[in-house]
Length: 358
Image (cartoon, rainbow, N blue to C red; front, top):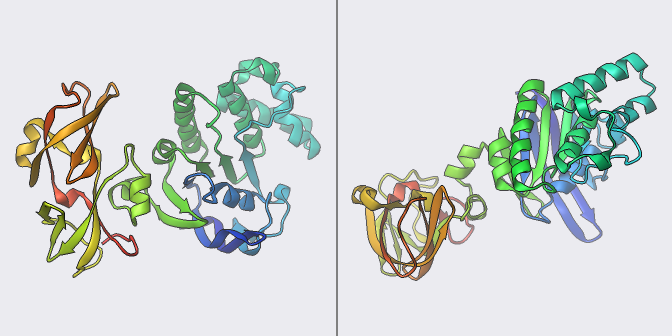
């Protein structure tokens, strides 16, 4: 794979606080990489280091094979889109798109061509004569993306660009961003705390915690084979159900609950000891499907959350709160008893000590 961006042994500290710690990351040419994590995990800090807005304490950053660790942002061949739009309120859309190009003393015909091209790609041609105050949030964010687009750069950096928009607009712009990437083929690095954005947009996701990358993989791999318990818990809504117990001779035990891990694909052979078993709410069978499940039980329903397409039920299994995802038409209510089942092979096992996948 040809690398578009390479980060080698990157450290960043603010006084005694280490924000990024010996971080290494290689991003392929034309890849859409999402940096995902909760607030304070270091994802925006990493993006700002790539952009040159923050100076690394140690390590190196390469873009298109060129060492840009100490280069100015304007010399890095990047275009950045911020959460806050950062548009000039006194300028028209056209003025905002062309401002940086005029400052770079680009020929007028080239500026006009790039602005027209960006406006066409983003479908903002009717808005060129308007000022930002006359635009909706979604339109403003399209203009902000357009301002990066006109620079004709190799790498686009997005810092939570959709978080100020309402749910419907976020969903619409998410689709547009994916189509834009497919059309342009540029490398895109995208920061978000929204796992739906990450799963739908990314070629690969880097899940971060405490300045470290916990797992770097495709969305499907992160969902189905999380590398550690933190990743398993972070991905999914509701998150994975966990039992704390012991794994011995291929059998997991948690209180009165006991089942064989038949068919489970182990990362570590011969493990025995304290472990966590996790299974996702959508992998719990109900109704007629229970009969084919290796593990079956009756559980009390404590809370029901109807979501339209799905219905979530909070139950209790072996003294542990346990979410079950059912079809939207499920006729259940709090206080009912629910027959459920699951296949342990679809679950995930984690060492109770280091919390890594077993």
